[in-house]
Image 1 (cartoon, rainbow, N blue to C red):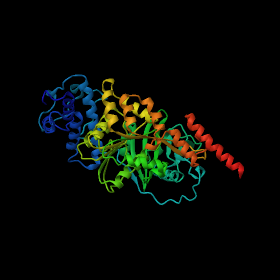
Image 2: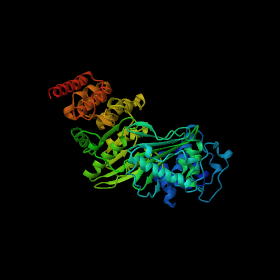
Image 3: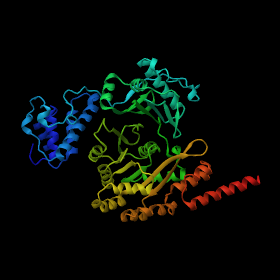
Image 4: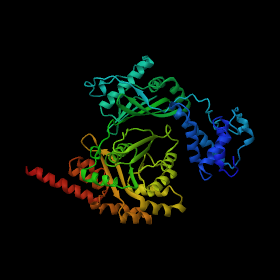
Length: 524
């Protein structure tokens, strides 16, 4: 390699050659074609394309994982400042044996797996099962479900059938998650509340049999080696997000029930008068729209609803990056490209950087969780793309603080100016008890008007809340105002509303509505 080549690219080329994946000359030619200004991410994407050119599509997921291991190794070695030992690796395309560990400085845990001899297991591809048409008319509660206490006596096939039937029943009952864990009874989450299915405590063998029952032997070996695995599970027309792990008592698996249809904003819980302003945010041809909220607040379904709005009303190219793909978006008026981290791309940041060269009009980012992803999202929104992304923040002011504080102090003035100019709006949501035995979505909406942009540019985010309170005519609302509006429409009880409200002015308005209702009821 050219001595002027960035050190991390040299180390990646070295690791590729050591593992007989790509010889040094091929790496050099690839880097020359990209141009000497390319960085490690661009070079890794080019390497991945080269390696996937002549392999079976079922092996692409494994190849992505292996290239990511080499990238991590290259970055770590480059940070030490050492140069690769080029004398120990082949320089031409002729096959050569991999160098032994002691000659290549690979540590026991750092040595990348051989890419030539990969098993080709697509370990993170979706699990797909044909499911019979179950008659669930007699399933009215957990007492109607089959018990898992007989798990020790089930064969592997019977355990798989039991899990498939159980998941179908839980969707019928309106549950959102199933948890199978050694040392714990099986439990579900319904209406955000944890509920036990059974009093039977699963043993380590029970949990292992149930969590592994849906996996082929190759996937089981992959999981037992990795100890963590996430993938999509497809049972007939139903989709689930399966996450498996190993913990101190044994194996555990969580099954998130993904909605099998794309709901409208109103169906998700947005009031029609507020949904109008959210749809207007999606009319922009560029800019940044953020959907935020805590885990389990429904951000994924809202993001899917927004993507579907763009898909139906515009004629654009949409690139969506998710981990994993949960809700499928068929191309309608738009051409939709859904990419899954780990299967179709190395990471969010590499996919976002690559997307800028793939002629998108709209970029959807499943999670903006690191500095580079946030920076690339802001840059993309400034260069003529509409970017829709999610963050784990509790309200609009905290969203701005999260975006700004992730950058070093020296960059914050520039990022404040960029965000103030590119942001279109923030929609923050959460689910709370409605007092009627269910849950209701409440939200706040911040539109980037001139006063909001000035506040962001000046870094005075503590003033955003008061600005939102007085800008309802521009489409903004706070959580308290949303709760008040939902109480006025009898979508939440007074007690449930008061338990979530903090603004004394809004609380007094709610009490006034309650007093009027009480007086009207007394006169009847």
